[in-house]
Image (cartoon, rainbow, N blue to C red; front, side, top):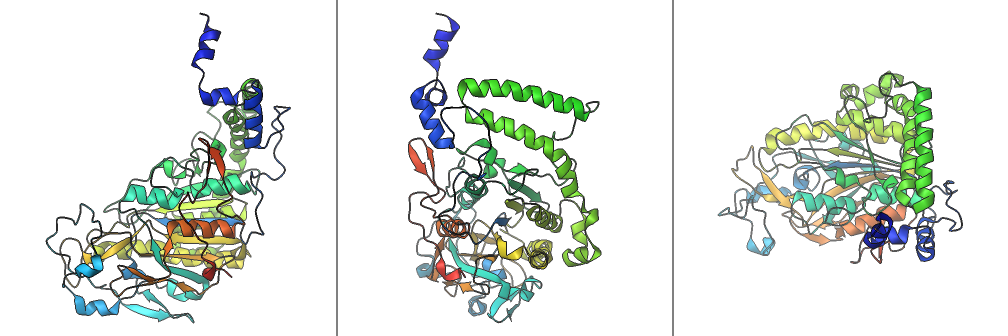
Length: 486
């Protein structure tokens, strides 16, 4: 048997249907990729995205600020003064109602109530209660939509973050940013559509692993994965010319690679080959656009006064927030920032103030900066973690310190920007900040609402994979939260 015959016997189903020489495969591939099946050209799509919107979008960009670990809602936004009278008393079984526990607290003999040690103040015209840890947030509650009734099934970090980012507890699915890239495409020619940054935390007592699979494109074409922008050293690895290689030589090398990849594409019609060609070209263009993007010397004194001195330090949350504004300004469609160490199993008194100080002024500055530049009404800013924390203490308990375990039944997120009814406070929890008593919002509902703001019906933004019309919100019910929309 010759090698060609052996190849035909071993060819996979995916490669068979990807063959441009197979009529059925060519038709299927053209349908999925929106190509003309009569030619294997690589001309860009006029829309740049793959799915025209279903109705008029309210926003063009998203800046998603993910607090890795799960911020404690009752210490920040979900004010429960009645808990002062419950200090060190056991959480009633009728409240816990048999809820699954993590291994961190399942062995505890009791679940003593830990009231928040922090003072709260009623702020703005909407009367939102905000913790003393967030003095800048107190000044902008009327610009923000607070959802106090977020909930999830996931009780551990990896599946919970995966669900929040990709709509599924099993990793390997496309994340929200990838879906936005796939649907709407790019707003610029010289920067990625979707960028991820991981900000450094001041306190590093209990950081969580943050995996690159959270911002992968999953089963979507590879071009919709995020570009990771590093906070130290070269912003993007391997983007610069190697030592001794001139721009002319680099261009000639890329032209040669493009020609070879073009031959492969014409033979196999493989979508990933097309992605490789386009990404090489984007990388070449980014050699000039990324240094300009990350050159913060152009920012004014007033800008640094707004964001604070920390914004001058590469890798801080304030620095990444300022970079996020610069990206949106230059047409980056989706910016994701991860800030670690919110997993407060212990030492809330020693850790939570540092966490809040890292992000509070920067979040306020980002909102004001977007407003000043006319970008606020077309940008959605999202802030939140993957779940909440328990009202009962994990470990030792005193009036001045305690710990909190994971809590999926209720937590708080906030959003601000275009298409929202600013100042809305949505959802209500019981006196223990343990169960939702009004207007629950599941992670799927959150995703459906974000897609709605982008102009998409979440049930119709789909991608054919493994014989199914896959979608971000999955097959379980998901509802747009219309009450928070303008």
